[in-house]
Length: 348
Ligand SMILES: [Zn+2]
Image (cartoon, rainbow, N blue to C red; front, top):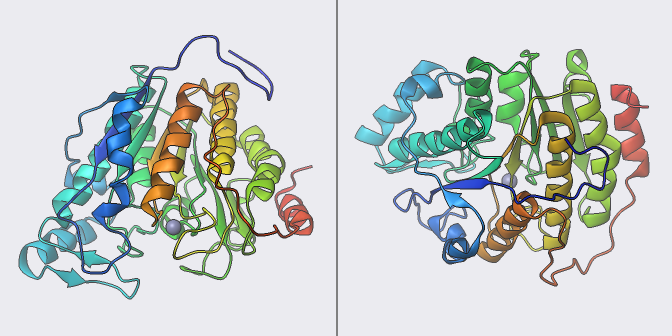
């Protein structure tokens, strides 16, 4: 396979995607709403990827990560009490949410399986509800079942030994970290704005799992330059240390500078750059096997542009992609922060 940083492909990638918009999973005035995908969906007809049909995951598959009592409780609340708010985020359930969440998991599993068995080179699961805040025993943070974590466990059950999850959503994926805190087969690396929901994700969260649970908490307005630094100084060494066989990406588009609920600083060009580098690292370290999974992102234009950047990275990583939406703010310096993280993990 191709080696080194500046990878260019000679043959087109075979890319698949799944789509679970869950129009009935909706709550008044809630930012995690079906309209998040309204700008993206009409554009999907132009992407160079094939739609993969999704079927619902089974409760047993959800239980690869979650306590079966949580899975049963979500079903019960949806049948008997919905619409209901189940935490302060607020996380909501409607009568259809249990089925919607199982379909989101199933779509993520379909993408992961297609890549794992070689039916596709790479994939993008465009699903809601999102998943990375959902812990083994608790649905929270707009998330019901942890799509990406369940996909990692299924990939391990189907024969892989090491899976890396990179999470560039603006929030820390506390649920994913909790799921794999003591599972040495999975590494988890998260970039996130420090000081916002859910409050986890310090550099020092997992002293027993250095080089495997890697948190990069960031100051407000950290953007394209910061993420480019992080990619080379933190993400690449994590690949080198862990040697994953597959990469899963929790792709949240709320790290865009004008997201309505966060304050990071990525532009669409920044999303393209980090996504393209992840594609290249996957080629270098894990035979190109990589699946992006949608998490947050609360401006429909940012979600559409970010998803388009991901598709471009998956299908034509040698090209460029931008839409002229650079952040108007100065980025903070993060050199000392990155040095502290590198020292903690022994990345030299
Ligand atoms: Zn988020």
